[in-house]
Each structure stands twice: as C-alpha cells, then as structure tokens.
Image (cartoon, rainbow, N blue to C red; front, side, top):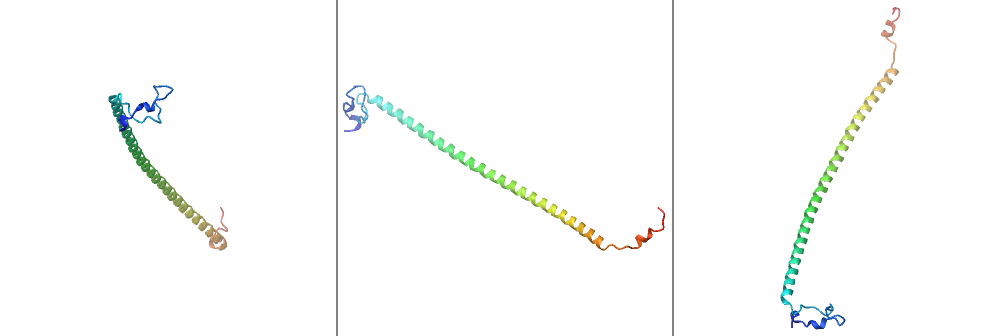
Length: 132
C-alpha cells in the first residue's frame, strides 16, 4: 500500500474533525487526487523557480566577487604606484638637498681656507698714496 492510498482517518484530530494531526498524516487525501496533483505540480514549479532564482543569485555573487577582486587588484596597483612615486620624489629631493649641502660646505671650506691663507700683497700696497 502506497502513500497515496493511506487511510487519512488515522490522522484526524479527535477534538476537531477538520484538523489533521501532522504526526500521523503523511499522504494525499484519496478524495481529491486531481487537486493534489495540481498542488504537486504547483509545488514542483515553485521548487524549480526557487532553484533557478538561487542559481541566478549564485551567478550574480560570483560575478560580483570577480568584480570586487578586480577592483581590489586595481586599488593595490594604484597604491603601489603612488608609493613608488612618493619614494622617487623623496629620493630626488634628498639628492637635491645633498647637492646643496655639499655646495654650501665647499663654499665654507673655501672661505675658511682664504681666511687662513690671507697675505698682504701688491694689491694692498697699490692703494696707498692715492686720493679717492
């Protein structure tokens, strides 16, 4: 005996004949097989629609994940290029500052050397005896 031929009177509630006890009723009422088949067809259609919707959602999530990964990769690339540009700028600035510092040190060295080696020469004595 199959599920379709189950005796549904076993699952009728004693307090109300219109209620079925869910712990006993597991089948389709034999009095309305056409309506039950139509209900099963509707349920099958709903299950198929839900499966199709879930498949579309999974596909959309996969596409979104791929887009997110591409955006993250692009953002990381941009961040890396900005850091490289900043490092190159710092290096160029440091080179300019070092060159200026070396020039200033050379100038101070030459001034110190000129003070240390100062001698009174012909140019100094040429100025005597002349009216300005």
